[in-house]
Length: 385
Length: 228
Image 1 (cartoon, rainbow over the protein chains, first blue to last red):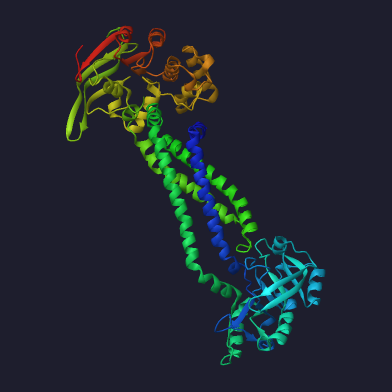
Image 2 (cartoon, chains in turn green, yellow):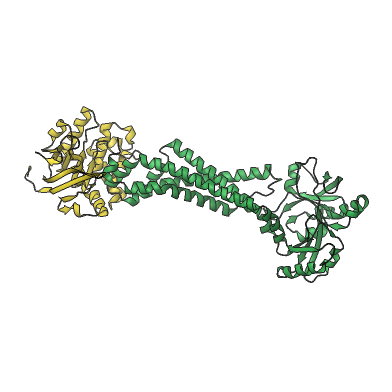
């Protein structure tokens, strides 16, 4: 009890110094938490991928399409439950800066394969029955103020022209981490328009999504599908959705590693700053530590006082940093939704934040603890006055 | 013995030196001294004569090179660090020139500090602290922090802290050195009371002849040697 009392009072003895240290730790923990969240979210698409979904694309590159005739042949492969298809549309809403993911998909099969996109039954029905209909995620609709029934025009970049859609539904994610910033419309609408405007580009799918009956069959089905089109003009590459997502993530893995390194560097820097503060504090209090030792208090008492003060300040900063992480993450999710459609801080990140704050406190206390607990009493008492 | 009582402090052939680089500087040489129970001893001498070092050795906060110090029959030169810390907590009361109070603790809490190392209950500690602060006439300042007290009051708190465990011996290093004349007189009167009314043994280092006058015995140190 005495130790706690003296630790807390000592921690706020030099208010300005303590407040600045707390703010420093809080900012470091905030940065650490946000950077860790960013890295975690980068892999979220991979983690969220379903084990029962496969992606088939052109074996040469994703930019090359596949004939729509593949659809029926893929359906016949043993273990295939459902086949959907689509194209990356790459449309722009009003200005280039209004970037969001938009796809032309086969609505019925696609929504069946992606139960995480939750639509009201009447909205789903309206979407399925309107060839010019579209659906979008809740966050995207909120960002641009779209309502069901609105006409939305996208300027095609891959498929030139002004494309008009009627918003028939707004989906919400089944989980907090589901991306609610995507836009889907009928592949048939795209294909029929292309048949008139650019017939050579019609009847092509950018990708096939395959639902398998059993995750254990994924490898077998992949092999069978690719085997079907071997030596054809458009060979396929089929892989699990996870591997497909990972191929995107791995392109930027070096950046992610760099961000992770930066997050650790931030912690190391604040450790040095906090250690310097604690060293100054201990130097000023050497006579007090010597007095306590003279009165009979042992090295462990002194170590507890010094270490406790360091940990208390760091944890205070850590908790403040954690508290600030939530509004900061919300701001990022709201204001930078085109880059970070989901930016939610996980419980694991909070745990690591607090662990980092504790580590800062403990490391910062090492030298002062050694100094305070090994000081010779007679020498320490001479430091006063 | 000065007061006819047996010695409570027995110092025999004590020597202490400091090392400065490759040079060894003798501070105390062949000190032999007995201090009787209930005696008020003043150690005087010029700066660097070794009086504070001798006081530190008697208080068990420094180690001698050779010789023996027995206090209350315990040879403290033979004790290890942890044993010495426990011995100090039970047997020595400290009065420092600059009071050495914990600035974040109130007068009550400062006096309570040494009692935290004893098995006393919270209530018993409170009784002891109130008695000690009453002895130094600071019952009305219990909740004051050192910064809210004058120098003389802070030294009285320090004296209360020194006596609260009822130690065998009180060691005082220039207890009036940082005080004005009036406050110094109050502190010396208080120390005198501790000797006469409570039978305490005090060893005091001082430069002040007026302070030394209060003591029963005055010993002089010159270049590490007791001269009188």
